[in-house]
Image 1: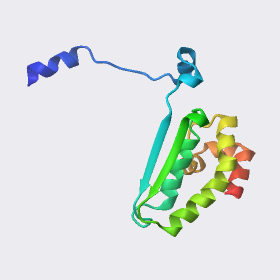
Image 2 (image 1 turned 135 degrees about the vertical axis):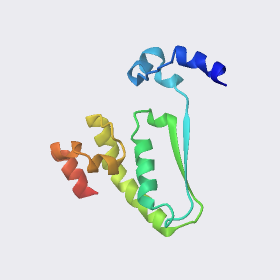
Image 3 (image 1 turned 120 degrees about the vertical axis):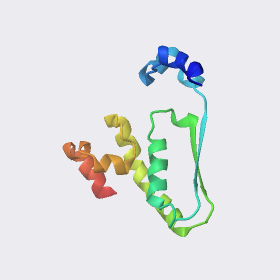
Image 4 (image 1 turned 180 degrees about the vertical axis):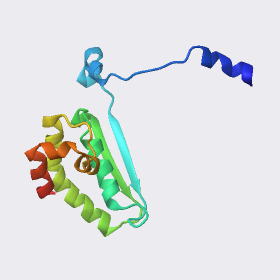
Length: 131
């Protein structure tokens, strides 16, 4: 076992991702279409705010909007999850343009508002109030 693993330790591979260079290599219409499935079984085992934050962060990702689809599967059929997504749809009308305009890296609303980044802009404070 020791002998077979030594070759990987002699020359380790370190890879880096450069998403900025992606558009130099390919065009927008050549990007693959993405389907993102978010499953939630029960609002008490998996709180709706976590599912909503996941959906909003996927939609705010810097990818062409006609190339990405987000599907939510609520196996429990919870009214609480439905209400949370209705409120998230209203908030998304403010959040998604905000992420694009200011090139936000923390696209999850909970992570962004809990960080120190949002205290510096007045637009973020306005988003907090609208939320």
